[in-house]
Amino acid sequence: MSVSQKTKSRRSMLLVLVAFLLPIVLAKLALEQQWFNYGVTNKGQLLESELTLDKLGLDKAHFDKHWLLVYALPNDCDLHCEKVLVGVNNTYIALGKEMPRVKPVALTQRQLTDAQLGKIRHASWHIQDMPSLTKNLVRSPQVLIVDPLGNVILAHQPPHEADGLPQFGKNILADMKKLLKYSRIG
Image (cartoon, rainbow, N blue to C red; front, side, top):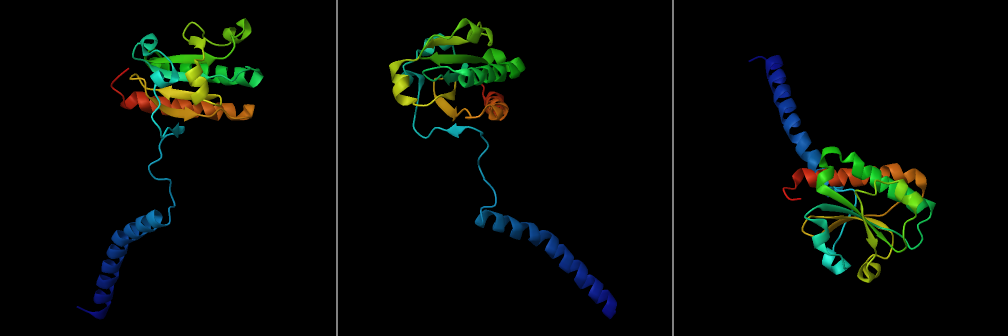
């Protein structure tokens, strides 16, 4: 072998080694330097403590093995609360063919007005007064995702500003679609 052939052979070998080692070194650095949020695929907040419909004071028999989108409304449902309610309703409608598997629930502290009911598909909703157990456990308005077995899985906090509502609905929709896709129940 001539010197130029040995140089070409060594260069080729070096390039092959770099091609295989570089991704491994980059992956190791990414893990050690925490460049990524690994393991996080949900948009809402996973509940750390066990929370069930029974603990919230809600009867599972009313929901007939459905996934639930539970919106715990504030004491006074003002314009912002109304927009969140409409946003949750639109998220429910956006589920499309998965709508029969999901039941939207509104837990109210005061009766909804006819105008508020007119803005949602209230025939699809289960609207009831918020039980006192729920008032003790859910202190701020939020949307809870409940599985068909009655376990609360995720909580979504509504945004304070109206311009955050579209992203809020998209986050709930993404979580619901993912849960419904991988679930065999409900």
